[in-house]
Length: 142
Image 1 (cartoon, helix red, strand yellow):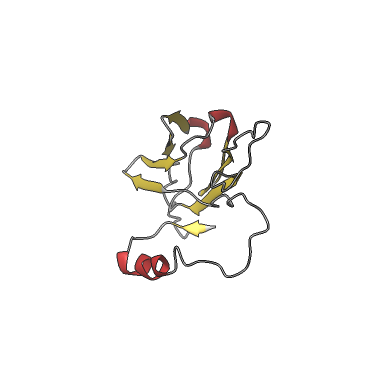
Image 2 (cartoon, rainbow, N blue to C red):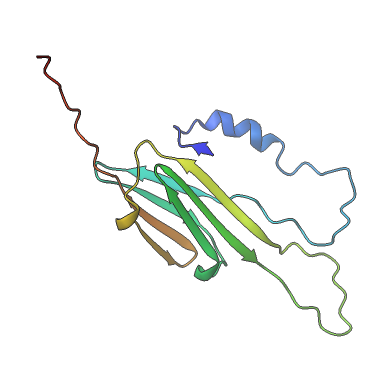
């Protein structure tokens, strides 16, 4: 579970140094592994959270969204495959298949009953209304 925090570009720079470094072990499969995560933007206002997630090439039937209190999980089955015709030989395959997923915790519980999801042009848009917070009750000592 990942908490949504402020973005600090210098922290991501360290991770990017190692992106693209070749692995020295031979890959037994000619197919590239599927990435395990996807890019997301999360914003909020007084009433709701707004999530935009990039899921290009995914069918909306293959997307799963789970909301449990203030925890949200989004996963999708990615299928980028090419059928090999008779006589063809695959020299390199960078298209992939597999499951991608993200899970995160929000600052306030989500009202699951009124939450909405739309998927258009490879972008998943979630509208997650915040649950009303019960006001604290003050007791009088008698």
